[in-house]
Length: 442
Ligand SMILES: C[S@@+](CC[C@H](N)C(=O)[O-])C[C@H]1O[C@@H](n2cnc3c(N)ncnc32)[C@H](O)[C@@H]1O
Image (tube, rainbow, N blue to C red; front, top):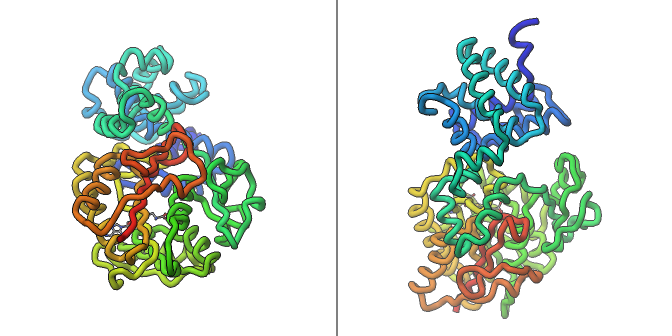
C-alpha cells in the first residue's frame, strides 16, 4: 500500500479546507462542495468531512488554548500545516464521536503524508496529551473566560455583550453561534406553496419551512427558483419591508443593497401579489449578476441595476418603499460562516458604519414623502444598528422612526435597542441576529 493511500479522504478534505481558508482567504461553505466532489465524498463521509472542517474552524480559539498547553513552544512556531492537523485531531478528540486511537492515528497518518515523519511523531505526542482530558476538563483548565471557552475573539464577545445588555444570555448566544444552523427554505408567494416543501413550517415566517434533511438543491421548487434557501430572519426582513403601511401609491419598490438576491426574490414575489414592482440595486457587478439569477422567472421585477447605493441613478423621492439590507460585520450570522469571526477586525467597523449611514441617508432621499425605508443588518453590533439609525434621525428633520415590530407576526423578546426597532437572536429565535428599523419620510 502506498503511503498516500493511508490518508483518510474525509480528513484530507477537511485539511485542505483549512488550508484554503488560511492561505487563500476562502469561504468554508464555498470551498467545501468542490473539494467533496473532487475526492468523491458523499453521504456520511461528506457529512463527516463537513463537520470536521467547519467545527474545527469554529472552535479554533478554544483548541489553540488547549494545544498551547500541550506544546512546549509558542504555537506561532509550529508549522501551519501541522497546526491545522493538530486542530483537526483536537476537534475529533473533544467534539466528535471518534475513538481517541482513531482520532490520533488518522491525524498522525495525515501529518506523515503531508509533512514528514518528524512532524508525525510530534503530532502523536501532542494529541496524546490532548486526549488525557475531555472537553469540559480542558475548558476548566485553559478557558476561564467566555471568549476562549466559546471560541470567539474577545472584541466580538465585547460587542455581543453590549448588544445583549449584559452577561445573562451571553453564553447561550455564543453557544448558538457554534451550532450549524438548520436549513430553512422560503416558498416565494404566488410561485410556490410551503406545503409542497419538505419539512416543518417555520414558527415566525408564514412562507418558511425547516428542511427535514438532504440537499436543498434537490427540492424541485428550489431547483426552479420558485423557492429558495433563506434564513427565517431574512424572510422577516423582506416581509416587514412589504408590510409597512403606506398611504397613496404603492407601486415602486427599491432594494438598495440586493446582492446576492435572497430578500429581493421574496420582496418581488410580495410586490407582484400587490401589483407593485422592485428595482434591485447592487454595487458589485458580479453580485448584481447573482441577483439576476435569483430573480430569473420572477414577476414583480422592474430591473436589476449595478450601482453604488450612495450615488444611485434614481431621482430623489421616487420610491414608495426602500429596503436597505446594509453591508455589515455579519456578526449576527456567525452560525453559518465558520471562519467569519476570525476574519473580521474591529478596524472594519468605522468604515462599515460610515457606509451604512450614507446608504440609509440615500435611501431616505430616494423614498417619497410618506414612503418608508426598512433598514436591516445581519449584525446586532450597536454601532451598526442603534447608532446608524440615531445618526440619520439626528441629521434630518424629514424622517421619523416607526414601529417595525408591528409589521411582523408576533415575535417574543425581540425588542431592539431603540423604541420600535426589532432585534432577532440565534439563541432566542433560531434565526440570524437580524436588526430591523422602520423609518418614514415626511
Ligand atoms: C447584506 S448584503 C445584502 C444581502 C441581500 N439583501 C440578500 O438578501 O441577498 C449587502 C450587499 O450590499 C452590497 N453593497 C456594499 N456597498 C454597497 C453600496 N455602496 N451600494 C450598494 N450595494 C452595496 C454588498 O456588495 C452586498 O451584496
